[in-house]
Length: 388
Image (cartoon, rainbow, N blue to C red; front, top):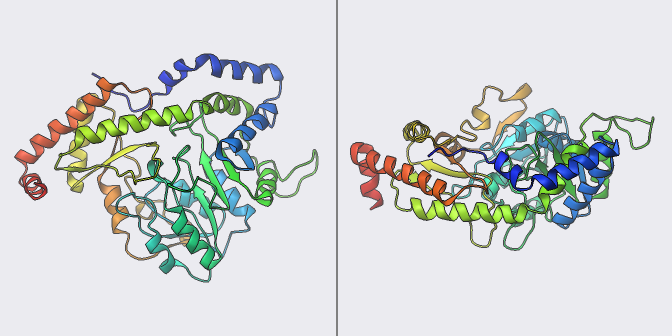
């Protein structure tokens, strides 16, 4: 059996008529940029979040840095985030001209650890950007309290968690703005790239709208801005998909539960944690090997068995060759949890269109490697004995 990592084509085939109809509507409208389909989708996406405003932009990176610019955050300012996520989160801070300050992640969720944030705050700190990593919400209530105490702006990087929520909060409701990416790899993606800013703040909405469109909100009148617009074809694709996102997330959660049940007892790996009361939407299902040196061996085993496993964020941002831009970064304390996660993570195939047979095949392959590894490796045997 061959198990692909992505199910984009399967998903398209399931709702092909809906997507094709929206594309046809856009093509026949003759309005492909800043047209009626974009306006329609922005309204639908705002309603989905229970928020007042959505601004479609070119990609998720732009969504973050345009929001920072709309808030007046730039050179001389510091923005706190964490390093075990995609490079673009920090990249957007650097594009805005600010300094990225990295704190460690929670060892359970891999999201930013609220307990580490306060010690990283200085007089230069202007904002916090938590990432809802892998589809698990960060602890927004604790982070909101810190932001309020220190008069900081709060921007959620929600590129990976459309449809997720906490036990008593929704994404975007406790922050100045939430940003997202619509690149096809996400749990809610178009056939290409795109992004959006979700906010209840009318000033952020108005400023991002001007910034995305060459500083213009009136024809032939420009101030200062850029070219970062979600085009209407992508908006039409996303509009068709939006009505299915909750059902698709339910399937992701179903497969995550099946993975978790099947892999219980494996001595060489750790499984992802879904906190009680949280709706984890499993953009990715990420396991971690108990030792860094086991990661490549398990990956190789899976690939040889025709399972397209991958790694995500396997080099922490502060360990990347591109860190830091212009020396505009600071490490706030030890980042041991983030570094350990980066060195040991493996993403198993995860998408709604998986089948039970495919999930079970992945489970059996991981368990076979775990059994052989634990029995043949002295280190593995030690871990297995300790776990028992």
